[in-house]
Amino acid sequence: MVTPEGTGPLDKLRDQPFTLAHWSATLPDRDLTPEEASGPLSDEEQLQLAECHRAVDNARSAQWLLGRALEIVRRRRLYRGDGSRTWVQYLAAEHDSMTEREARRLQEEWRLGKAVQDALGKPAPASHVRAMLDYADSTSDEQAAHAYVMLKTAFEAARVRLAAHQISARVTKALEPAAREKDPRTRRQAVEVRWREIHAPAPSIPAPSKPTDSTQPATEGETTDPLAAAVVAAERALERVNIALMDASATERRSAAEAEHLQGRLRKVGRILAKASVPADDVIDAEVVEDNDEARS
Image (cartoon, rainbow, N blue to C red):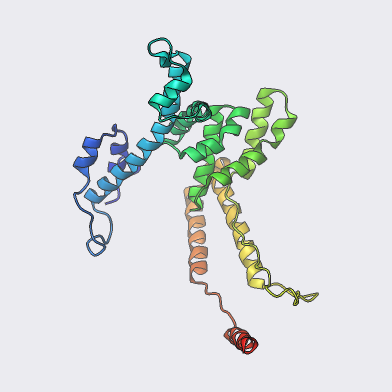
């Protein structure tokens, strides 16, 4: 059963505090076999999935909460115990010999982690938060959180997995204008404008494989595969579609009838691409195999 966003069992469960007692009470005692687990999720299975998701969210929230707790202990010198214990001794005794560097990193990240959770509605992976730190340092935690939500939304719309290295690459590009702006307000505006230009997922275009035999270079004037060029064009078109989908001003001007018409055209293109089958010359492949067999003999 599909429920409206924000009213389903998953949303209700994630608003509740996570406890081990609740975990034990909501999950089944045994795993279902593949034969039993088939078809759409039932209401009970949706609740079980929500509980598993809530456990993940709990772990991610605990990451930035740990940083906040460490900052409180350090700033208020609560680590001193009987009055003689040092910060390093406290980390060794209470946090499995955590290094000062690791403790400092957690304290630097927790505000951004909280801001991202507030803006996103759920905690983000620690690696994603860490990748946005330089952005936050040049702007603010709130602006960095808003930028992260924008980026994540664009990737989800394109059904592309967002990885930390992709965030870091975009942060580096977005901060290029910051080096030229001394005024903090102007710098934040410049970074935000640059971020909006590059936040969409770039098409993934694999590099062509190099020939194993260096004695046979490509001849001058050799043409590339036209299908490969068409695929590149399609990937670039998809990137433009993703950017256009995030254009709020265009959305406000678009009528419901126009939106339905465009939606139909997009689905038609998707159906055509889904049915496409890439042919290959089996004769050439067979000749290559025969040549290799003769060379080995």
